[in-house]
Length: 173
Image 1 (tube, rainbow, N blue to C red):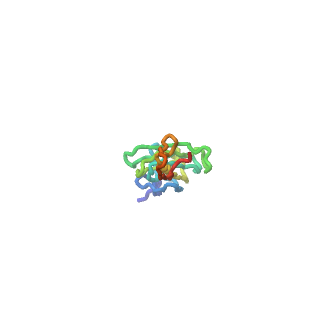
Image 2 (cartoon, rainbow, N blue to C red):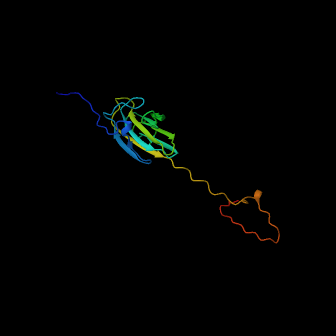
Image 3 (cartoon, rainbow, N blue to C red):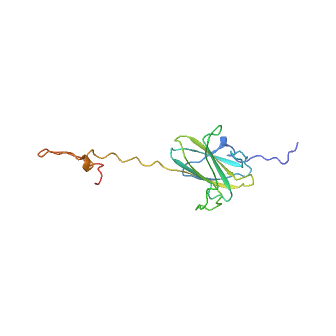
């Protein structure tokens, strides 16, 4: 028995279930040549996964040399599409196509997200650069100053009575 003209995907992260993990602050290069057209809007997709930190996350294919689309889902099966972009890299310092994609969304801490990076259509295949950038939480507010931190809340001092105070965390007013 001879088989001809059979195409089998050799792409390891060809579907959501086999998404390649990528850490916040990291980037990767994959190739969607021969990948299955299984992104939510079609196109030969390669899949990546990352974990939300409760802050904004930016996923980008800027630097890729052809037109891409990015889909962000919160689960492989029955998941919600939480982000999408087509042509978001105009003016990117990474070069590549201005029609590459970049999407920013607010994540939920601990939720695993899945990114489908795909060409705009089946004719857009090749090397795709992807990066994941996670904003860090703002620092907590400084501890409260003393109760008499300003003129309006000044402590009344009686003549002849000693008072001990602490200006730790007091404002500079």
